[in-house]
Length: 149
Image 1 (cartoon, rainbow, N blue to C red):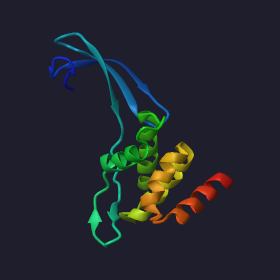
Image 2: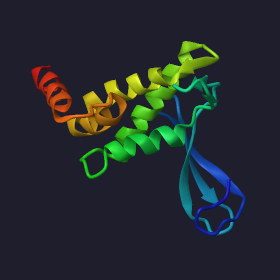
Image 3: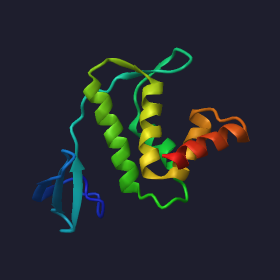
Image 4: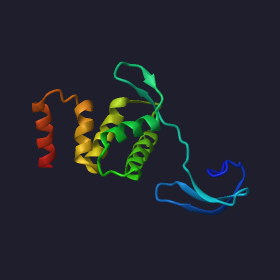
C-alpha cells in the first residue's frame, strides 16, 4: 500500500475494523514519513455481464454506475457516502442474483428505486432519461405519482 503523503510503498497496519457492509477498514502508518491513513477493503465477487437494450454485452462498471447517479444528484443535498452506499447495494444485489448475465433494465430499476428513497429531485432527473419522459404531461404524471406516495 503506497502512502498518499510520500508515495512510499511500505506501511504497517495499526488497527483493523469491520463495518456493517462487510468492508474492512485498516488504519495504516507509513514506515517512511510516519503519517497515518485509512484504507477500505471489500470482497471482489463476480458481477454479471449486462445485456444492453441493443443486445450488446458489457461488463458491469461500478464507476459508470456511480457517475450516472452522481449526475442525477448534482447540486442536491445527497452526500457521496449515500451515493456510494446505493452503488454498493446495487452491486451486492447483482452478485446475490447468481446469474452470469442480466438485463441493464434490472440495474436501471434498482437505481430508480434507490433514488426514489434518496432524493425525489434526483429521482425525477434520472426518470426523465430512464423512463423516457418526453413531454411535460408525462413528467407531470410521474411527479403526481411521486406526490401521491
